[in-house]
Structures are given as structure tokens and as C-alpha cells.
Image 1 (spheres, rainbow, N blue to C red):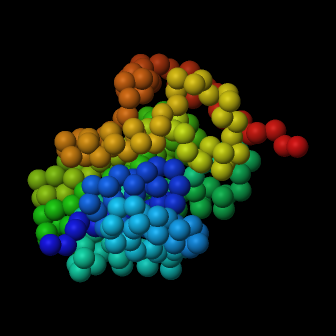
Image 2 (image 1 turned 90 degrees about the horizontal axis):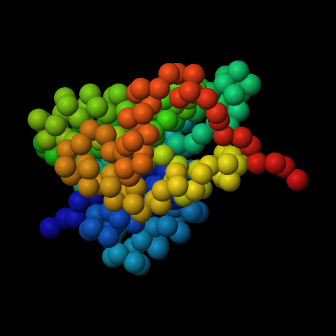
Length: 256
């Protein structure tokens, strides 16, 4: 009997790498998507040797139409269908909106919104006829707050996932948004942010976030907010004025 197959974007680091670990450990074959072909190959070898699963790699830039189309084709395929799609690829912009170039902002939006929309649409083409499938979209607690274009993009992911969960659940497809806070991954160092300004109690570990997300998806939850502390933070953001919720921002690491 064929093993179920999971496709993960942004799969070579951070939450994407942890999704790959936990899904492989539970017996899923994998399709890993990221820009760096060499890192993808290394991860594929590690996962195959450790878990004995089949791992396919697709080097692709999801902001490039040709790269995105290549991944869409695999997600849409009826042969060896993807039963779990994890839309995880993403990054943050450290600069203020007006200081970033409009091209930077469009690139950021294309990855978080356009790629997620198109891959979800592709997945539904083979999941709905089978009346089976799970789509996990990695959002953020920033999506509950007015936090610039990153928060706005993640707010779209949250809203669209909530609607899709309600609309497609009765047709056999589970859609969930994962909304973590600060997680110990490469995310903040890659954007050049100063991690030391973030209180220690706000940090989460990637294995816990992924484990909670997968458990919540199995339970049919539309939104997964890992940890009680972030559930409380989300609840408070609904009561506080915008001037408080939007205050503060990450700053860049000092350069040598």
C-alpha cells in the first residue's frame, strides 16, 4: 500500500524542516520545495536514511511564475497525490513600508499570498474528487494585529484559511492556519533582526509548534495558536487599542 505524501514549501530550514521531520516520522513520503537545490538534496538524503521514506525535491522560487507553475503541477497531480500540503515558505521585511522598494513589497506579497492561493487552488483539484486532504498554511500571530505588510499578508492567510476550513470540511478537505509567535528558527536572523530584544518567555521551539499544528489539524481546527501564552496574547489584542497593538517593531542587528 502506498504511503501518504506531504508537500512542504520552505522545507530546508525552520518550521518547514520540522514539518518534514515529523511527517516523515509518521510514515509520509515527502516532496520538498525550496530555492536551494543543494540543501534540498542534503535534506532528502538525511530524511530517507533516517525514516526510510521516499523524498522528491523540487528546487523552485515560488515568486517566479515558472517555478510556481512547476510546484502547482505536482500539487495538482492525481498520480501519487499530495495528501498534505504545507504552505510554509516565507520571510519578513525589516524596513519600514515607505522605505522598502515597491518591488521588495510586491515580492514579499507574492510569496505569502499569491503562492499560497495558487497552491491551495491546485491542491483542491485532486483533493476534492478524492474527498480527502489536509492543507496547512503557516500564518503568524502578527496576522491578528496591525503590523505592516507582513501582518497584513498573514491576516489574509488567517482569513482565507478560516473560510476554506468552513467551506471545504464537509467535502473531505481540512484547511488550517498555523499562527505561532516567535520561534527558534533561522527566520529572524535571516532578516537581520535583533533577537535579544525579544523577551525569552515569548520564544517557542519548532517541534512544539509543528506538533500542535498537526494535532489541531487532525481535530479540525481552522486556526492553531501554539501555547497558552500566545492564545492569551491573541485574546488581548482584540481588546487593546490599535495604538498599543501596533507599537514597537523589530530592529536590525548592528553591523561591524
